[in-house]
Length: 155
Image 1 (cartoon, rainbow, N blue to C red):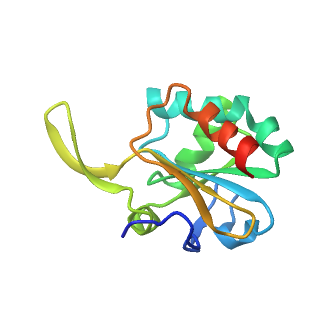
Image 2 (cartoon, rainbow, N blue to C red):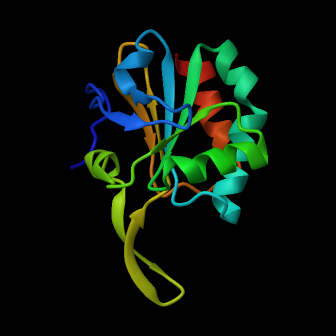
């Protein structure tokens, strides 16, 4: 399935690093930066999470919440959050159902290996639950700035 900008973002429920199940619809009235990443504790994913951490306050001031999603279990998310002092929640999509729903569970090649995994992607969902912007095959460098600038200029 592929997402379509201008349409309602599909709701979902996933276990959170906060210990509770979280629904996308819980954030109605706020802008949501929903970012999918491959794996906790890896260099690119750590850089991306820390970039979101370092800009968290600015996103909050713009009425935006940051939510990270990966196939890692909640216990690994908790270690990742503690190690890097992340101020936002991470959701565990262990069965990659939400990743498939958002069209980011892809066939990948890396160092000669082929496998299914997360294609690093970010979705901006407005306060009414509508998908307004997407980035696929994200390059980590300066990506958080792109997301922040989009919200500043458009929402």
